[in-house]
Length: 188
Image (tube, rainbow, N blue to C red; front, side):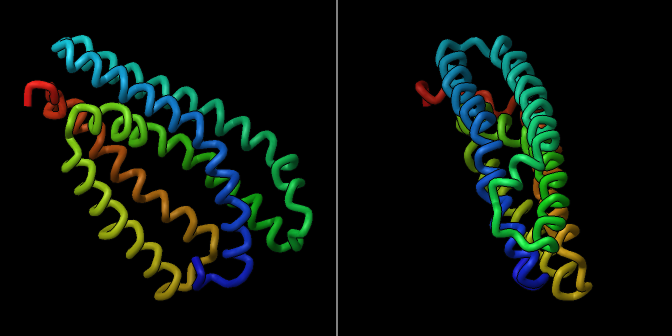
């Protein structure tokens, strides 16, 4: 993002705390789901936890849609808190808010699947490898090439960061569906 100029960095600086606040609820739900998942696996309720995991993922998607809509509809209020923004940075920040809102929904599935289900089931290696591939082999090189090699605008670079979430979306859902994560860690 630093290759896109001062406006891109300033808008990113505005979006970082906004995104953190909006993700807090989903992080809390994912942590609670991790406790529920571990409890069910410890009780050897494998059929129940599979359907519970699907339900928790769907719940997180619904919550993310509500939060994303709330953020999008209140963008004037949110950006009004940042009084020192130049008109150019404010305009770019408005575009970034749309991308953050879309990103909330994209992040909902991997967040719940990874933090709430797979890690609690002891599937930490899969989560690590998926993070490494999605972030360091796909998303960051793609965004860097688009910024440095192709000279994309900041909003497109910010949007390309969401490619990581798309990769995790499919990988996480496939892994949850496979049931390979269902391990009773107490017995191991």
